Image (cartoon, rainbow, N blue to C red; front, side, top):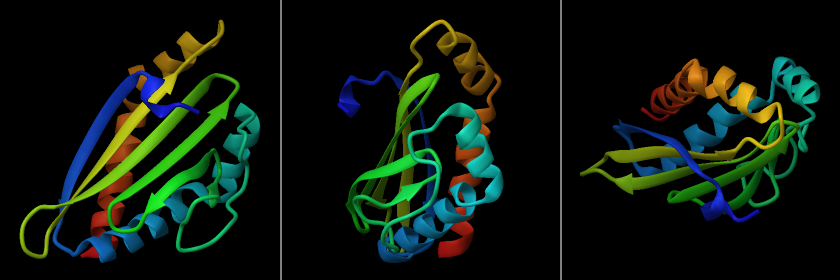
Length: 149
């Protein structure tokens, strides 16, 4: 999947009072909690997600999966690229970690997605248009911040 070719959806940022290594661990833990539950697996089956279970190495590395997401690349403490697809969307979620001062890390989550087919547009409206996706990403970033701090 060519991530740069996917349209930009949004980006959310938080600053964490922790070093990048702690933020990286917190990110992996938060992703496991968010996308490793039975509820996430049911949602993944409903949508026809390519990846329906959490598997692979932990801490996360290339080839690790979560429900709906596969790790395309992992550069510990710097960048984690997740990709996925299901009936209504092809998408990528890119996490970038940057220094934000002594003992502080900026964590950014960029979403890119395409919503093809006749049901793609209504699905986009349901997920993106309602603000549900943005709220979920902000909750995930807050969970990473709590874990790492």
